[in-house]
Image (cartoon, rainbow, N blue to C red; front, side, top):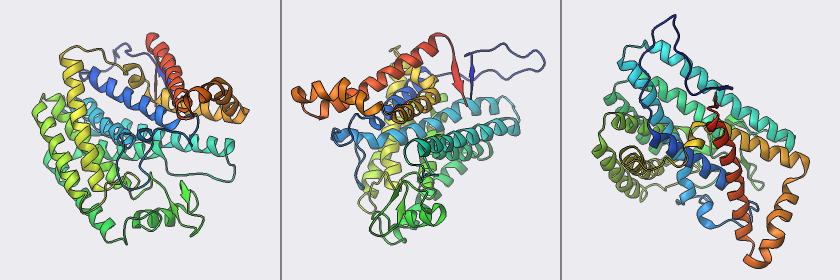
Length: 372
C-alpha cells in the first residue's frame, strides 16, 4: 500500500492514454457504502443493535444486506469506467491486466493480514481464511479478465450461466439450511476449521464469504461491470430498466429459492442488483447532472484507508483493553439510563464513522490517497 497524490506529472518517456472520466457520483456511492460498512460492523454492543443494522439471520433481506453487494457492484462499475476507455483507446490488454491482477492479489493479501492480526489479538487458536477483502480481490481479478477478453454479449451469457449454474448447484445440494447446504459443505471441506462459524452441535462449518458463494458475488460484480458501461455511454434508461427487472426477477425467483446473503443466492443477486442499479442511476442524476454535493466522496477515494485502518484501530483498542471501557464510560453508563441500551450502541457506531470521516477528509484535503 502506498500514499500517492491524486494526480502526478505525466511521464515524458512514454505517451499515455487519456485519463478516463471520473464520476463524482461513483466516488460518493463507494464512500457511502464504506461508511455503511463501518456503521454496521462497529456497534458499541452487539447485543443491542437496531434490526435494520443487522444482517438477516439466514433467509431474508435487510438494509444491511445491501451493503456488501453494493460495494461489489461498484467494483464492477469502476472496472468499466477505468479500463474500458483505455481499452477503446488502444492500450494493449496485457498492459491493463497485469496491474489489475497484481492489485487483486494485494487486496487478497491485505485481507489475510487483517485476519492474522485479528487472530493475534482476539483468539490465537483461530485463523479465518475467507473474508471480505479476499472476496473483493477474487471478484476484482475475475471481472477485470472478463472485461478485457469477453465482449458484452459474452459477458451477459456468462452472467446468466453463473446464475443458472449456481441455482442448480444449490437446488441439488440438499437444501438451504445453515451448515448442511452444499456451499457450506464444500467450503468446510476446503478450509476446515478456518471458516467464520463452526456449529458446536455437529462440528460443521460455514463462511458467508466462502469460495462457493463467490460465484454469486462474481455475478453481482459482472452486473456492476455492465452497469458501468451503460453509465459511461449515457444509457441511463438501461440502468432504470435493469433495476426494475432485477427487483421483479429477484422477487419471483425468491419464490423458488430463498433470498439469502450468506449463500449469495441468485435471487439475492437479482434483488440486490436491482436496488444497486437504481441507486447508481439516482446518484448519477443528483450528483453528476444536478450538481448535488458528492456526500461520502472522501470515504470513496480512500476506501482502503478507511476500511483497513478502522479494523486496525479496533484491534488495537481490543489489544490494549480499551474498547470495552471506552464504550462503557463514553456512551453506555450515562446514555442507557436515559435512552435504553440500543441508542448508546448506535451512538458508538456513529462516533466511529465520524472519526474516520475526519481522517479521510484530512487525507483528501492534503491530496493523499492510499492505493493498494
